[in-house]
Length: 345
Image 1 (cartoon, helix red, strand yellow):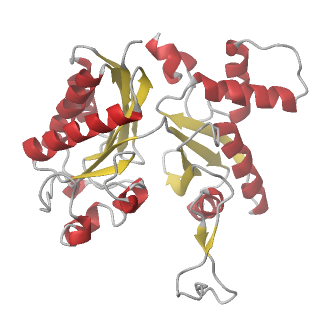
Image 2 (tube, rainbow, N blue to C red; image 1 turned 90 degrees about the horizontal axis):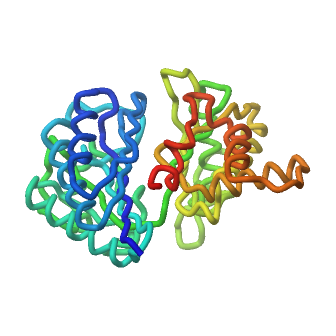
């Protein structure tokens, strides 16, 4: 079986087309690597890039694109809706075929060593590559974001896994790791009120939210720790954002294990919570790529819900999923460019 690794670096630039093109070109020119997509978002001021290839060429492409970002992106001037720690915010390596998770962890260490040495960027490891349980969650590492990084690096508990604990004002820090296939999935609301989107996010995300009493004070347990109300969905991270160019609020979701919580389950749960808050869901979007299995399960779900019992082809199931999830609300959804199996074949 051919060894195929996917890499999905997130760069803190979604507005400067010249920089976005330079990032794409740095990846496209690496032999043995196929650039599958690059999706800039002006509101997030962030670009999600997806490429695949054999292990060593993928590491090389990740390093070359990091060089471009280090040269062209200045975090001192960066503003955007999405949380971020640096110019190259996160670089995950994902096993696709012929490669184990442990193999991707080794690639993570190779990338981190090169980036810290060549570009003087502090690097943290997360997910399967995490050096400590407290660093497994990306959101925990990102806490305080770029603006709080200088102080964070002074704390011995947040010494980077690679590189010196020295603040790089231009590039910030980078997080890298090995993980399962993640689907970046956002659900759109019929309101511009991001507070409603954030409330929905708190209700559905696995980590839940802090419990408060009638006066708004945080409820503590016997040990003095804040009591948490679990979210309704497993393997889900979420936050509420406002998309200025569309004048709407969005529940921005990371499905960290789509076999546990697939997109259609998240979509239906957001619909349910939105209704309780007097809002409605109008559609959704997938940022980057997603596996065919996610569309297949959504199509089967909606076919059963519509009491359609006849057999369905992959094409029919994908079409039904696109329609019922409203995936073309903001931008036309093109299966040949958004489903990873179609892109690799």
